Length: 117
Image (cartoon, rainbow, N blue to C red; front, side, top):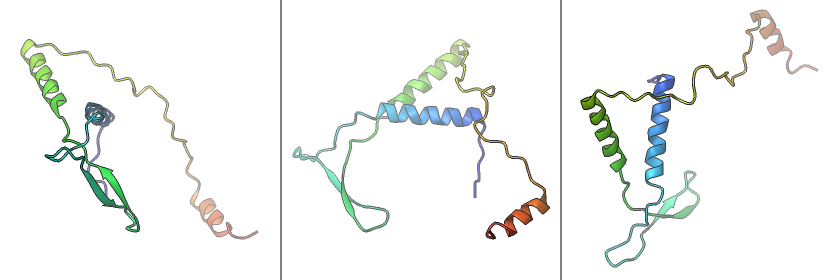
């Protein structure tokens, strides 16, 4: 069951943070042992019938968070509030197809006659 609901702005912000995290960690090097040997991990697939080798990367770099926090503090101290325009706004048309609700009698009739030819 879904326990949380987020606004459009919150979901956009969360996606932007995830993108920044991903982009700041795409060039991580492979982790090595003290002797310089590359480290691999043996991982079982979800269905459990096959194993594969996975490269172990170095730890993630979260320094972008420090930069974001310091910029936020600087804006608070100086009283500057950046004007932000989100590129995906409410004025964009929905891609969801609007379906009209049929009458209950029609829905029951279609349900009961769907397998008859």
